Image (cartoon, rainbow, N blue to C red):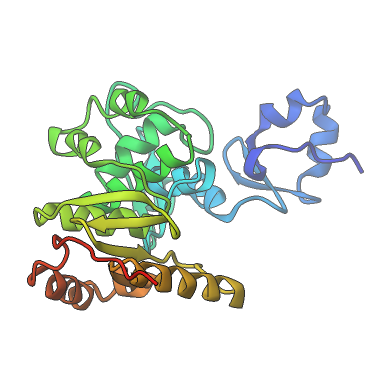
Length: 288
């Protein structure tokens, strides 16, 4: 049996497999023995990515938040499902393609190439505008922050990709800033929307880099979904908290759940400190 050529995400057109040197006889022999037909002209290997397969089977391309998190290391908003950009002329129902299940989102891009076909997974110039129209402002800013942090693009490239989107989406680029996690982006965006002075990624002597500083002396640390599972990391966090306390910083550590699912309660804790003006008061570090 011929070896199946490696293709990105395990999904490709017939001609892509043939271009690797397979003859038509060899290709036909692989179908059903390592290759599975997804739709007209498309095949998948046994290791093919599930979401990419789903996009092709529904007559689309993996796009939007799904493409950005898979291919470009972007932060994934919670419960995003599978995001698919349907191509022009894709019909639903019994005529050609099955109806989209509830977990699959039909996303729209923007610009003259919004219906173009670039392969099974959309490039960022299509996926980014689609994401801007498919999620909330705060989640989109977090996605953009993560793309910039991963050095997947520049601010100038993002501006170019968003130039055909509505101004309410394109203007969100002005809210991006340095961030090491999506939760950090969310808290920064939310607090700035309330008019609070927030500085991200601040270096504090004897502590290191902290996620956010509100005002002059209120430090907020934001845990990601998989943050600090080891005892060593837990100990390091407490050492940092102790060092902040010695320097008279107000401090609050928020979990992923508190930021994403219980924000009202987290915000109440933040505003309790802010309402006293403690975040603006001059620090008086303890000295031995």
